[in-house]
Image (cartoon, rainbow, N blue to C red):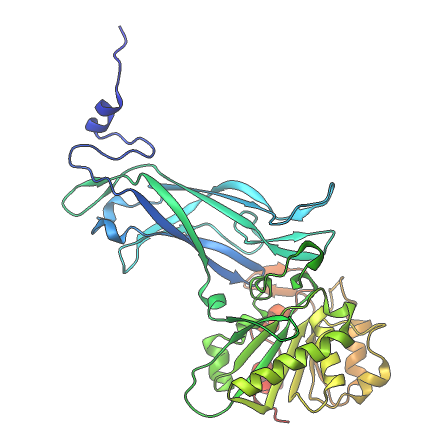
Amino acid sequence: MTAQIRRRTVLTAGLALPGAAYAGRGHRPGTVGFTLDAETLDGGEQVTSVTLRTGRLGPIDPASLTPGTFTVHARATSPIPLAPGDQIFSEYDLDRPVTAARLDRRGDVVLELDHAEGQVGGGTLGYIVSKGRNVRLDLVYTITQNSPLLLHGGRPVTITGFEQGRLVNREVDAFSYHTSRSGMKYRVFSPDHRGGRRPLVVWLHGGGEGASLPDGYYDNETTLRANRGALGFATRDAQRIFGGAYVVAPQSFSAWMLDGPRFAPLIHEIIRDLVRRHRVDTDRISVVGCSNGGYMSMKMTSVYPETFASSVPICGVVTNLITDAELAAIDTPTWLVTSLDDTTVNPQANTVHAHDLIPGSLMTLYDHVVWEGHQFPGHWSWIYVARNDPSIDGTHIWQWMSRQER
């Protein structure tokens, strides 16, 4: 005869059932919220941990918390419909390995997730091939508790449900949201307000971070999540070198290269507005851009020669977009950066050609794009600028920028 095991019997015996509250001395806490904790790596933003808001349950015994206590499943899908046959990189539907579990100072459970440069299954952005655009993926994370937590005193706790909260990226969240009078969206990092006027760094994104207005997609997010270009200038090291700097990241309606002459005054309008509203030192405004933005940074110094103290075009395009005469007329101090293995923008026909024509310009050429042991595509030389790596005669690029005055 087979014995019938009832749910109450299992609970009383102390065995775990998914989603169950423990009977007897157990605690029935109800639903617990959680946040997705993200970091923008050189290759793009990834969810690196999950924080469960368990602090309100009471003091948890750390010995009862292991990487196996919870399972994390992640599903990431496109926020906009895809055309038949279109491709998007990188949707996923998988379990995220938990590499460590700990309690933070608030008593919340933090689940550290496996992540690495180039690793599929943790990113927050997808690249739609036909549109050439990065979009923020719709993320759905599911938390399953596999064994009880123990409160001090030995009371077991199983959480009955989990509610996903917002995506938290402390570096990205430090940039405020804005829209210009012309409708162009942008993000701003503001330094400590003590002291006098501060320099301004204008970051112009690459082609993948513009809007996709035919789809109604204009997020003011991907500019800070696709790479560390703008974020690098808001780091503690950069802020120390610049003596505190504003950082602004406008987002194009499409791609800068599609209509640079139209976009130039819209970017300039944002700069003028920041100067009006903040203590910006107008003699120390720098423009930095990658790929599409590398082109746009040179276009800005061509159209507005009196505005910028320095320009850093990274793997920028000039072929059929900026004439030789325009390049030769640029008098803004310029430091160009690219990698010789760039197969997206020919370095000789663009960066090297621009360097030959822009009077007094500096140039750093890399053989490959490698950072902390990981080799990236050759086009991604902006990684080096975001890490203050380019140097000439012992002077690194951030220090050089910080010393330029109009």
